[in-house]
Structures are given as structure tokens and as C-alpha cells.
Length: 208
Image (cartoon, rainbow, N blue to C red):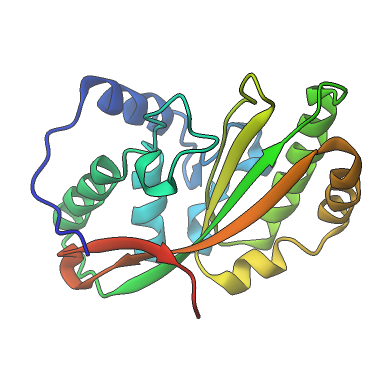
């Protein structure tokens, strides 16, 4: 388990957080590349711990060009995200109790014949559907590399929320299209564990 020392924000990270937080409309928060209202997280639907984490995840940033194949823990600036969360907890006088969050990682490869815009339309519809189900705290996806490999990832309040959010019609259409649009794909399920008072954190395989 990693213990987080105080870490100064990079300029890029701070600017990214500031830019996206300015798009927050009252109780709505941008948590994905999609900025239409139907894709925003309604902060009133989640408790304080989830609100604080979702806001910290606004600053989630990819650190590597080879994100499609790199180890998940090394892809993003998790240390800065957790430090941001610690500062928000302190500023709000909130007592953080140990909590786990559900991460889904989707690794894929598309053939040259796949029209990426078709994938984008399916993905956007599925994201809107998942947002309506609740508990969807963060969504990030990259672009295919020269070999057609890509990565997308979601952070959910719980595994239950993820299951509820993936059973709708838009997800069924996306699943049916996967056999045609992808050469291969696989899903990793991970746990983001944040300990009492945020004294430590860990990303590990989901075993619950």
C-alpha cells in the first residue's frame, strides 16, 4: 500500500483542474470527454466522499504515450489526484473513512476497417445511459495507437452501480458491435482502496 507524501501540483495538472472546474454548473460536474448536460455527474446524487473523489478525478491525466499497453497503475497521475483529494478533505473538515471504489479498464484493438466515428457514436450513447444509472464518477478514453490498440477506463462508486449502468439498450448495441468493430478486447476489474484519513491508497485487482 502506498502512503502519500505531500506533493506539489504540476502546472499542467493545476491548469487542467481549474479549466474543468469552471465548467461545473451548480450541482453538475464534467467527468468525461462529453460535456453535454446529459453526460454530467449530478453531485446531489452521491454522498460527500464520492463528491470529493469525483472532483479530484477531474484532474486525472494520462502520463504515457503507450497507455494502451502499459500497466494501469503507471498510466495516470494518481499521486496528484489523491493529493488533491486530501487537500479537499482538509478544507471541508470531512472525516474520511476507508472506502473502496470500482474501476473498469477496457483494452482493445481495432482493425483498419473500423470507422472510429462509429465506435464514438456507440460509446457516447452508452456513456449517457451509464450516467443516468448513477454512481459514475469518471470516464477517460484515449485514441488508438499505430497498431489500433486503445484503452478506456471508468471509476464507479461501486460494482453494483457499474452492473446497473451496463445493462441498457445502448450497452447491448455496443456489445453486439464489438464482434465486428474490434479485433480483440478485454476487461480488467480493479479496486481503488482509500484508507482512513487517506493515510494510504492502493489500486489492486477486484476480488469481492
